[in-house]
Amino acid sequence: MSAINGADRFAAFRHVSYARFFFARFLASFAIQIVSVSVGWQMYAQTQNTLYLGLIGLFQFLPSFLLILVTGSVADRHSRRAIVSICMIISALCAAALLGLTIADAFSPWPVFAILIVFGIERAFMAPAVQSLAPNLVPAHDLSNAIAWNSSSWQTAAILGPVAGGLLYGLSAMVAYSVALAFLVLAAILVFMIEKPAQHSLSGPRDWTSVLAGFQFIRREKVVLGAISLDLFAVLLGGAVALMPVFASEILVLGPFGLGLLRAAPGIGAILVAITLAAYPIRHNAGVLMFAGVALFGIGTVVFGLSEVAWLSIAALMLMGGADMISVYVRETLIALWTPDAVRGRVNAVNMMFVGASNELGEFRAGTMAHVIGAVPAVVLGGIGTLAVAVIWALGFPQLRKIDSLEAPKQKA
Image 1 (spheres, rainbow, N blue to C red):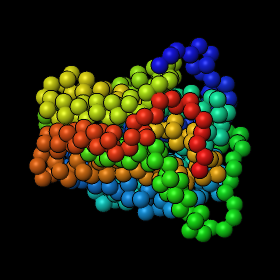
Image 2: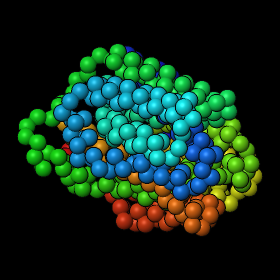
Image 3: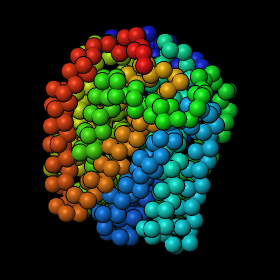
């Protein structure tokens, strides 16, 4: 890595539309973190059932999987800015519904799962649109900088959101959901204020060739296929977020605020790496660094699973977050730079479905395994699996391992 000058570190923010997009995404991500912490803690407090914690992830993932052939085409055919705004409004309505259930003392698994399914549908449409919108807001030479700041935005929310969620939930669940609702409304307003960007919208018939274009592009581009599938299986096996309420309450005995600290720890590690990448972008050995990041993520997962000391658990989670940030940065830069704009929504729909699978299905995997064998073995075995994935993918995708620079010319579809 090599440093870039101070002005270039903030190159993306010279574009007003991107600045609005950045803060809107931050507020929305912050709100979602508050909701996630509150729902998980409230669900476990009422049911004491780890299976329900896994189902929280499953019900949010299923819409992305079932609608994948629709959401990407919508992002390529229609205004991505409008899609993101509408989805944020729906998120606000979901937060309002959770608030209503809490006020009415009607919070119970199945009504909450129904709301989370709507959340999942909204996220299924927003994910490819929001991922595809950012490259429309900055010129190509500022795109890597924008991607680094996008990651830092999400990770900053991942740091502050869980801590705030724990604190706010400590006051009351109603306060937590009310703050999340306000942030989501403000985020929607900021997106509405973005000037209509240039977008190469998809035209022509809506046939199967058009619908499957994202899959076809990824299948042909082995580097992108390797990067996406690596993240899928590594986080699917190594994910431990769903079990944090168990570790916070039963193993580390930290309470709601401690749960917020645990949820924030990966974000702390990730944002430190993201800020470093904004100032010192990866210039060489990008593929090797990506695999090293996945391996470190697995090691951190094993340490977290075995730890019974709060500071060691937090340090392990920080390592996991920082290592994952390297993988995310390389993957998202490759996809953004190498994907033509006309197919970007469909490619990002596939990418975000895999990301959702790695996160939500990873939570489901962790919750169901913990239900059968216990929380500690579920996390430790998952971390070992992640290490195995890093080795297998490094051998199976030599093109990805040999990627040197992320500044290479964009490859064609």
